[in-house]
Image (spheres, rainbow, N blue to C red):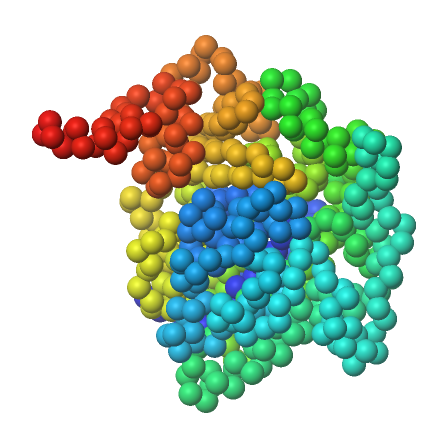
Length: 501
């Protein structure tokens, strides 16, 4: 196997899978990501461990699931959880650095409030927060040095909050040329870093890992008019789940719909917003093209693996929701996943379940570093080489802990079914074969009683085996069976069991 010692890791924020041509969108121009898919491996069942920025990004950094690293919420909407990542798990960046790599990042960090990339072994600025930090001094200096205008936004699109106040900004016109956007700035800074790393690579064979984390296509969609209006709303087919009634669903979903002002906006506005979101995707794809051209110009393309993924998806009107939140639909849990390894066959795809933490294991594998025994992911390199492991996972779990307020959830997803446990509310069960849009909750359906029991049992066993204490709630509430301990006297029960044997 021909492994590449160099890596370019591309990541977007809040990115729906169905916005890319390589995932079947016939309207959006994404030629550079499509070419990456054509020359590599496309993962069609790639999922985030938690559909919120900070927990997902901390999982990518550490390779472990959120309940283990315990950075469970974005600090801007912190609900009492930790705001900084502990040193319990060694980040992949330090392991790469210890192995002699140059390790860089440009773009969104959002792994903690104060500790930035430099404290985890990366070269690169700490760009904090969830949205483009357009007031950052380095960006303002870059604009000045390139004689480019500062950003000005108008024509904002908003709904109306339940209290009658104007809702969150969803989109607007950015009065800047494309070459002045924050996305172009991040790409320029990445190319500068690649040029530095190329010198080391060609002079003394020192490999590099370089990450570019774009803030988009996260809302609000603030774009130059040529991207904001790149696609006609007339070609937008609104998601079938726009017919969501919230009947037999957790009430919190309706509350989130109100928070995101869905019913105060017209159908024409929603079509326009989807078209604007597509424009954001194309803006980022153009920057990806610039990065690939830089690798080719620097004679690095043939020795550099390239990966692309996102921290989570976005609703963009699906289920009468926007952004993300306490609802475990595929719209926000399924993410794009592409991997190109030089020397690999390319042009392949797989429907095997892949998790964001698998990219962490892949990074280490490509570098020839032994996998972390504490990690929850596995390398995707075999898939890139056309070798699908026989013992690969056949189901996927995910977790959520809260955004705006605590709200614990756990999910088990198989190829056909999805189970969601909501301790304070109604549970959810979807037959994805018959209902791919997840509109009909069949948790209480007698016809799926055996399926429900089986999924509950499997989720319970997986959570208990992994050490996720959410399983304690399931122990007493559901017929999961097979318990060999008393939840209130577990140590004494263990002692008695030892004495009896």
